[in-house]
Image (cartoon, rainbow, N blue to C red; front, top):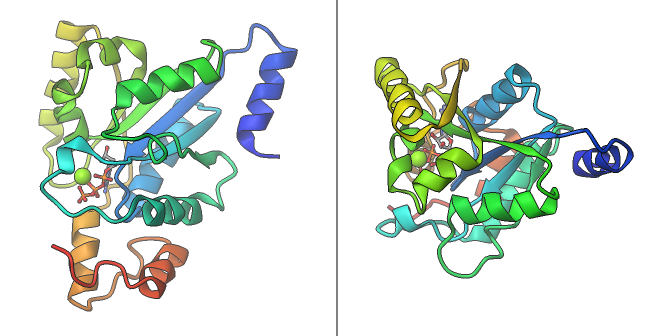
Length: 221
Ligand code: ATP
Ligand code: MG
């Protein structure tokens, strides 16, 4: 039985139970070990009942770049998370028409869990830094908890400053999680595939094989 069914059954039996649900949003073009270790570290530290990965549909902040077909990104996310019993993948943004926004996703999840779940949106330092540009960011900041992870290339001091700023000016409930630092990015992986360089040990083997089978990242960028 999948973890979401287990959570829903428990909610049915125990009316006081409030599940803690991690939400890991991203373009996942492709998903890599940086995403996976961040989600797992957050799950463990904050004792989350599960982490739902939400591949974006048409990300508004990436309009100037070619983004791989959303079904490929969804399938790679499924392959990457299949071996973790606490990880789930949602099609919510994939199936939505038009641009996709985190606030709409959180609202939809709130309904799905009858307003009883506590959501933890997991982000890397770079995404946290951009949060005020997101749709209805002020409402978003008070609708869920945030878990921010440091990411190589982004100053940790800057991350702490961002966390403090969002906490004191927007009442954001922002937590910090330490993750084994992996200087991996999807941009670098796409570059490496295009230039016939190895991508081994940067992402799960199943995703690596999927990329080659479907000849992704050969031409774009
Ligand atoms: P791209 O290079 O295409 O922007 P990316 O590697 O940044 O891809 P995204 O899908 O943009 O991946 O990121 C999704 C989320 O994962 C963001 O919150 C981002 O900060 C976080 N993230 C990505 N890579 C890492 C990493 N190596 N360590 C920690 N967090 C990461
Ligand atoms: Mg990114």
